Image (cartoon, rainbow, N blue to C red; front, side, top):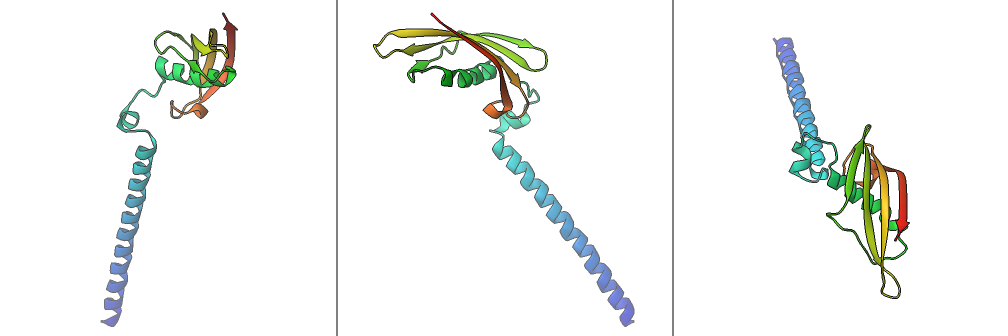
Length: 139
């Protein structure tokens, strides 16, 4: 009788531990999903089925790659005047210009053409992109 009682107690303990493990695993999965949601930038990033960057995403990244090449710190990019093209394998071509104010107050215009490769990942992070080529010409 004591042996059956001990066996039943051991089986109950074993079942209870399986339940505890299941709860811990479910909790870890929940924490992982919440962390992924928190670092993705919001609901639109998590729920969007189209992970390919748009023309606007590529233009924003192009401005980040062009900015260090301009010697003047007082620069402005026209947000609506750019040309966009896409090649195969996530290669994007952006053509536009940047206006900078010189030391004597004159406005300088620098045309640029940037080839970017999207490597995957969050499209708003610079590390998700690679600069393939950049051409600049001053007017």
